[in-house]
Image 1 (cartoon, protein in one colour):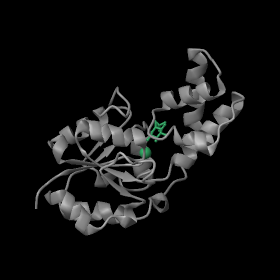
Image 2 (cartoon, rainbow, N blue to C red):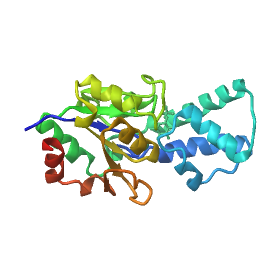
Image 3 (cartoon, rainbow, N blue to C red):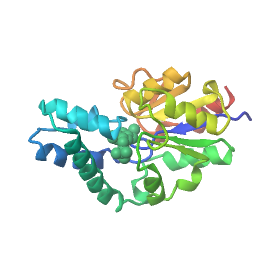
Length: 218
Ligand code: BG6
Ligand code: MG
């Protein structure tokens, strides 16, 4: 059996934290008098915290000082952390554990490639931190997705080439990052949204062992 690098995004791939990001951002938007809907939230997927605030401000055509931005970023994260604090294993998305276990049994490196600065506490909360051979998150990179940096650093950590790396992503920016890194991209979510991915699945329950073996041995 060959060895590949399997890189997982976190939010929206392993856990459904998008709903918590949304609640916290919605309160920020409310304080700024900006209407922020579920639809608007789609644009924030895979995007860094700072960029998310900028997108919300642009939505409402609101301008604030850098100091105020820092305050809102802090406020948002404090609220987000109160939701994270209540998370447990039950929030791991369907089929994820089967895929992680299969990769582990077959000695494949598993890496996290996330824009979040809260990645480690979330993995600890849902009790799967030990599955990861390495973690590259928002604290480790300077260029946010769609820049490929996070995935390239991840592959390097386990001494794999980009061509030997497979990325699981739920965001358009993440799929673009994987593609421009020269990696195999697997879209998790709506195919119509993630149409740039090499492969598409609605969720991990649709990913078979045969498919994983094909990725490993290709
Ligand atoms: C990404 C999420 O994984 O992380 C984004 O999809 C989020 O919605 C980004 O803004 C940054 O997360 P955090 O936890 O550092 O605020
Ligand atoms: Mg994501």
